[in-house]
Amino acid sequence: MVEIADGRTQPGEVLRYGIIGAGMMGREHIANIGHLEGAIVTAVSDPHLESIDRAHAAVNPGAHMAAFSNHRELLDSGLCDVVVIASPNHTHHEVLLDVLESGVHTLVEKPLCTTVEHCKDAIDRAEATDRPGRVIWMGLEYRFMPPTQRVLAEIRAGTVGQVQMVAIREHRFPFLVKVGDWNRFNRNTGGTLVEKCCHFFDLMNLLVDDRPVRVMASGAQDVNHLDERYDGEVPDILDNAFVIIEYEHGARAMLDLCMFAEASRNEQEISVVGHLGKVEALVSEGIVRIGRRSAGYGNVSTEPVADPDIRHIGMHHGASYLEHVALRDAILSESEPAVTLRDGLASVAVGVAAHRSIEEGRFVKLDEVLG
Image 1 (cartoon, rainbow, N blue to C red):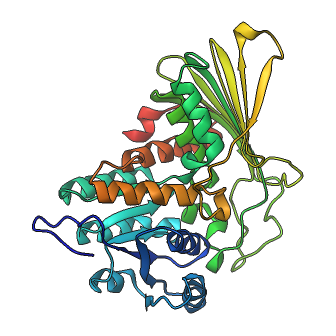
Image 2: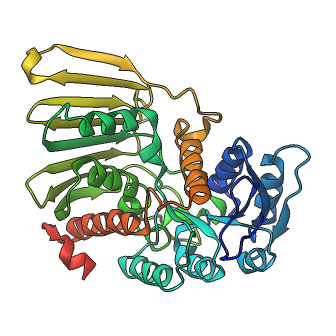
Image 3: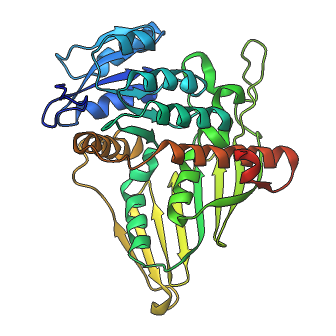
């Protein structure tokens, strides 16, 4: 990548990407970048040799990708203009602080960090190391799923009027196996409602467009991983929950999570209701339903939604590819990121509050969590 006098990148050149963490999500990023015009993966870091080998297999044929066992070696190599942090959750804080000091453009996968304190520390470091033209992007790719984008467009067009209620259902399969089984324990993930559900809390905050103020949750580990042992220890991650969020100006949102519900047609369903109407997204099927109260009960239109510009579907219905397009465009145009570290903090804070609510059996105010 060519540098200009003030340290910013020159549009029209190829962006060089480094991937920190070559596990499942790291390889998902490699595959998406491989389909991205004007981009190439030049380096990867991971202490796990098998993950490095799989990362090499994921790059485009004939492409050269340097491999490092430590993320600091990757940062010191000078091979990257953009770094994607896809390492395990509990490493995000340490890795992100080092990446921010390096000055490169950054995408950090969800969750931002596993604690509110670490999230706030990362934001402080990002502000302290800021430079003109650098983009620091929070990886919350569910925003970019085409049905979700359509729901957001309908809200902004006034179809439902003032948003009053948002309901998101995720009925899916259990947590996948990860290297070292790190995702089996709350101490590594931040807890299921942080690790997995920060995506949905971010969507709720975006759809309602207001500040969350109180959280009430009920959840447990009832089915998954109870027969597993790791060094004699039983996993402690929740596999189901209901979460209610109240917003400053009266709107409410609810999450219905079940992670032993493979017997479902749609992994994700989103419903938004306002005083004028309702819009729904059936994400797995790629369908949006739109109804207006003025049209009468049952008069609902159903439309398939797809984005013809998606070059790689991947694990998230093309959302990761669209996220990378938006990130690349922000870098080249020297624009503000569409998803910020503060969005990441807000989504983690709701998850932390939900876990506290389950543990203590009460509503938890976000101010308690944010400090």
